Image (cartoon, rainbow, N blue to C red; front, side, top):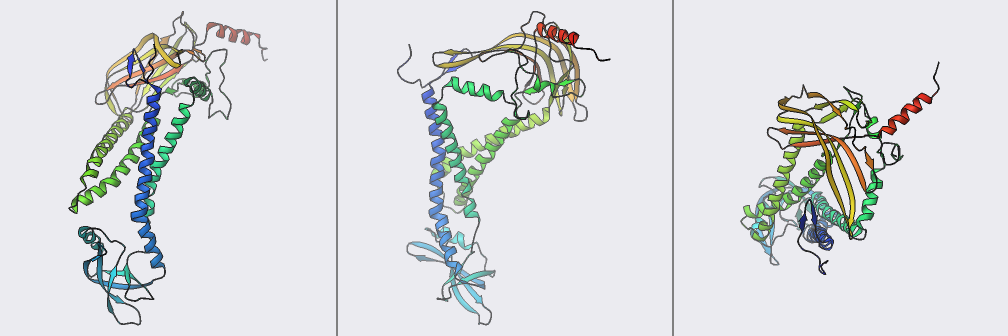
Length: 442
């Protein structure tokens, strides 16, 4: 009997996990709302505390005269409950005598330590540019007309808002669409080949998979090079983007925390929040470097075969090529057949994968792969005579693959699969009859 309330905890049934879609969508919405909220708060704080003073200074300096000056001394003055850094400068204007003036900036701070830190921007004896009010020559400002970095900092909160909004839209759209509909759309998308000029890849016969992706890739040693399934280049790209974005955001807050600690005015609340975020960023960087180094060290795995498609009972030849720079404990090549079934349990759609056949074709122990000399091993395989051919339908599939598994000395084991197409014997007989019935050319 189904519970009236959404399930909070997941349960595992075999290889499947069940849980509440309501809690899942709520968690995703909350997760993306946090991104949007942090971005909005960051923009508001940055606009009030950085951009508004920057804009006022720019408007003021636009009408001021630019002169050269030499810094004589520095001090901090208290004005309206704020500590204002003041520089004593000697102005040297053309056609006029040198005169002393008090130059200020827009760097007023609530504490004297922050004002003292602003004074360190310029050294005593340094020649700088000052801006003098033509209506009031005693009013002198020290600074730059336009600084780019306050406006570039807006990219960080805007990125957070963009990520959150995209996630919110995606979550809302997924919540309003059934799993069956998403599964149908995914199947239709998989049928489209972006490299075929817009045409749709259609099976050769009813419920038989197309061989376009295999026949279009010639091999170096043998006739065909099989396409690899599930290669993790996109995964590494996504991890790299996430790692760089996360660490940039953490670095932005970490600089402020370290600056406050050095200045002797630590903000422990922000520090305790940034520390776990920095640890998470370090873990992301370590995982990315580990995976990237593992992929670059293991290198590319290629499998080539001489005949394709195959029929039950047919024997074919193949070769495995392993590039990289590593030492391995073992490497195996296997012929695998899987049955994949998609079915419904109430309103839930499940996918079950069952391995029905596996044959070890070759096993190599204790070998070394060099950049100049990739590992190369030939093998032969035979499709069982009574085996089911490849089959594809909306809810069922029979998939044949050549699986290469390896265990490097210092890296995790890897598994890479290469799909095969096994057609029924009747398909070969039809090809023979077509060849015999075609007119001979003299």
